[in-house]
Image 1: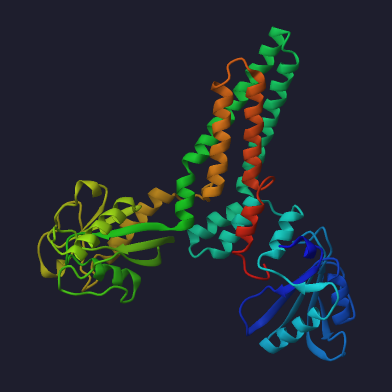
Image 2: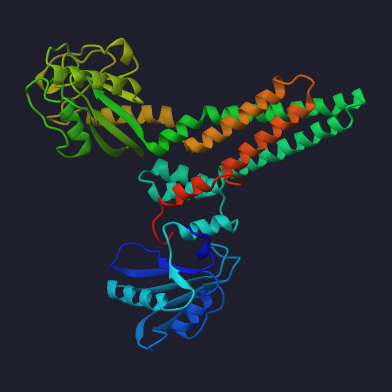
Length: 436
């Protein structure tokens, strides 16, 4: 966002794709109320809707009839004066009103994410809450929605603020000890409670970081690799779970040469299924590369579905796999610990989905995680490292101990966007749609 245009009044379509039953245009900035008066001839009382005819300010032509709402700053979504125009959702109607707004001095179309960026700049949202809002917009599953909602509503922000306040209190004690360094008894009396406070906060940070992988997994989705020998039914299972012919099914062994990815929702979780090459010894160079890739992807997947039409146990590397005995419609026993499955009749499909759901719950939990993004995790790891140094690394050098606590406070500030986040903001807001 360029600094020259930061004071402009911006406008954009904030509702969904046209045509629609209703279209919502949003304006934010000093000229928002002036623009509403120019189009409707009247400004409703704050936070009350008024039905008005909208006219082109230059020609007087009636463009539409709709609702006008006014939210004076700072008690608005962006902290600035905000106007909403609720129009009929036809493309021509919206285009005509947008042209009329563009004709007014001081108004311009909003850039992607600019409404939210102004809300952040005006203290309505901190960086973690903005990230939660971005995740909420992108959420495709119930688990992602719940986790994003917690982040957007300030769960992480409140915890970080509490940690920061605790560290500021500890820092005050340490600096008091430095001021009274000539009086050993006083210095020791204030340093001990400071270290106790730092130690407790350090443990809380470590607990949050230990849970961070769960939050990132929910946000990015669970990766489940389907592995097994050739012709075990891997591609058939993928197609059954996806509800479409995503993979080629053939009786010829070695048909799958590369890793095929399918994204879907299973049991409320975002899941990426990987259909991998059949695992076997081969002299075919292309198939051998497929086997190598299959092993590499399966070894780093969150879960492995091991398929075998003979009930062969998985390799040691997949000891924790969900084991499935396929082709049960052709007869044969189902070994202990295996799920019986027929992709022809559908028998066992629900059991496979239930097993994936149980593994997902074990990995992702039921409650939203506190830390959900790599950026948040790295900032908290930085804070934890400085606290560890403050406790163990400086002995009696209280000035160095205090400096590490200050650096930990700075790292916490980065978590919620108080310092050094301009590059992060540019990347983040570019992911928003125009009008948000």
